[in-house]
Image (cartoon, rainbow, N blue to C red; front, side, top):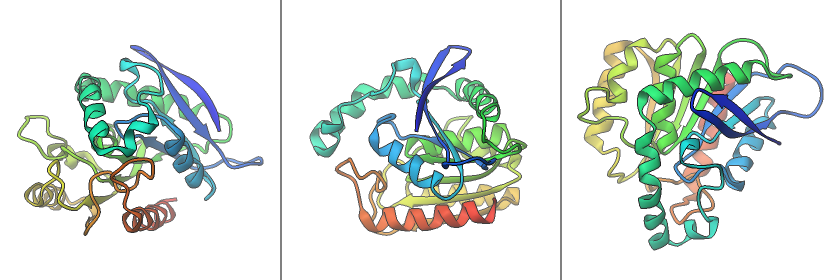
Length: 246
């Protein structure tokens, strides 16, 4: 794994770049982290994807709020401290508007495409929690450069806002997968239905599944919300998506 900085219009985003060992040109996977930022768990996830024969770029999409680490990993295992940490991170998340996210994504894609060992052509984007929401926005903005999306326990994909992410799905030309957390206040059953209706109306190729018993954040082994069955199911779904769209 290589730690590096990605130049952007507003500064530089620290990032992880992971590629398989040996020579070759590997399909690209852009990984959008959860709100807790780049840390060993995100590095582990990037490495696990790379082991399957992919180049993976994981930028700190909250770089405007500071370089990684954004949190003390020890705080994530305590439910009370986790909530307080969310409160501290919320202004950083609010700072990342859709407009800024689209501009950042262009920088990430350009940087990624220029790296040795990264195959030419569209990439797959994967996102977790707030990263899943932002990954959808990124795919909508760059349908010619992002060929598939894997979104896991994403929140606020459907809102009352005029620029709610679900309202932009008509631009998508690739395949999308959503693995929704169970009993998630940031993505309720009614909101899931609204997302699916929008995808149906737009004719998008998609899979939308509820992970029963898996709470918001179920993939993150370093937090109090980790749920092993949900994490294992997510890996199976993600690797199947990557294989279908390779």
